[in-house]
Image (tube, rainbow, N blue to C red; front, side, top):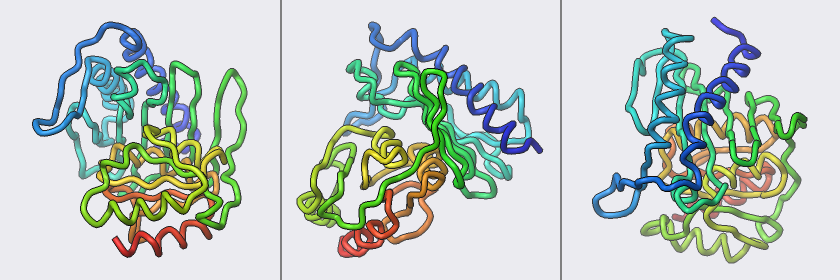
Length: 261
């Protein structure tokens, strides 16, 4: 079995492959399909091509590994090592030309997120971590990521993708937390989580996530000193209701609020 250094290098290979497949379609005329009959869940040729490029490389390099992907289904999910792929997290941003999307590459080992990368090829940033350390590579330089101290909800800068995604009892609880924070930004998808790891944002609250929306981000945030759980404080690899905080003290306070949903 490859060691962490080899697997981290392989994540960069996967990001390179996805970039080559995706970038010709960014800010170009591209057909958009809707995967959801009663809503809007866009997908493009770039999503499918990006995942296909990564899957092909995984199956060639690590044939004993499994793959869980958004666009092309699952392969060998009984494997001890499963790559969890989202070629374009933030397709709504992608189709509007906004660079707030990213390629998510995660590795589950025996059900637990162990390695992760968020690559943004237009900007050239790559956030990656292993749960113990986290790094940002940009313009040929690499710097270690650390979350920042923020113990009070009233001082927190928060991100979420869309407040309309919170349903039923989730909505008033989210609204109460949002009104208590110093500032909240919408439309951030994977970038909000990455900014927690970078020490720019203190809190992300989301709901309705799939595993491929979050697995890659868990080792990055944990490696930078933050916390990622579901709203009950459990592991977040399966998605659903997810909260990420840069400061464990803040996380405990937010969990108490979320418990009333």
